[in-house]
Amino acid sequence: MFSLPRFAGHSFQVVLACFVVASTLAGCSRQKSDTEAVDQFFLDNPKAKRQTIGKFAGHVTIDGMPPDKAAGQLFVLLNDAEHPVRLPPRFVACNEDGTFAFTTYLAGDGVPVGKYVIEFAQLKLPRGGRGRAASGIARLYGQPDGLKNLYSDPEKNLSDPNLIMTVESPGRTDYEFNLQVAGKDAIAAPGKLAAVSIPTL
Image 1: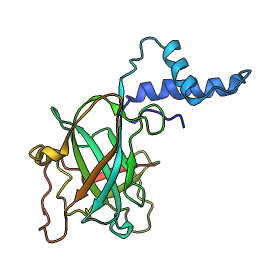
Image 2: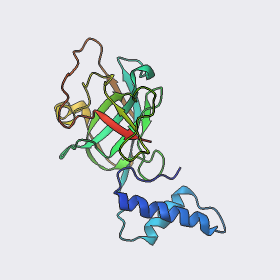
Image 3: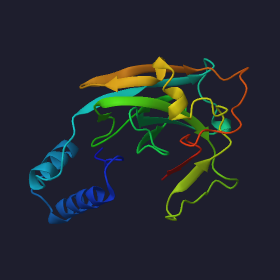
């Protein structure tokens, strides 16, 4: 399914969304596939930079088990290994069985090639399940972290070679991460760049 790039700037998303809507309203003689729609967008907008993508998908377990939904929604975040930021623009929610797949242009196509530090956070919606971000349209997942803040800090994760990945094209769909949480002390004060809240639709 064709999707707006999560990493793209707001103006790029708006332009791409307008293109898709315009194509739909135009009533083309035959319906374009998602791939054709993306190709056509970049043909029509030569200044838009199309990045080389590598698949990044796999499976996450917690102490050898699928994530416990009662403990919160499990997120995988990819942060710039050279210049990590507070909330990286590339993140995805895991399915109930712990599987995940990142999307940039088309469902499951991956992320721009590059070097990333991986973060994990298992966050909850506020009581009632309808947390709202400042925009009023997104749900805001937040603390407590079901992973005890052990894997949410990109600066801390840079010291673990298992949490640093270089994504190349065509990428991989068989990443496996088993997060060890049981028996470990929680990090009471997450680092300044740690993922302690995530807005998502």
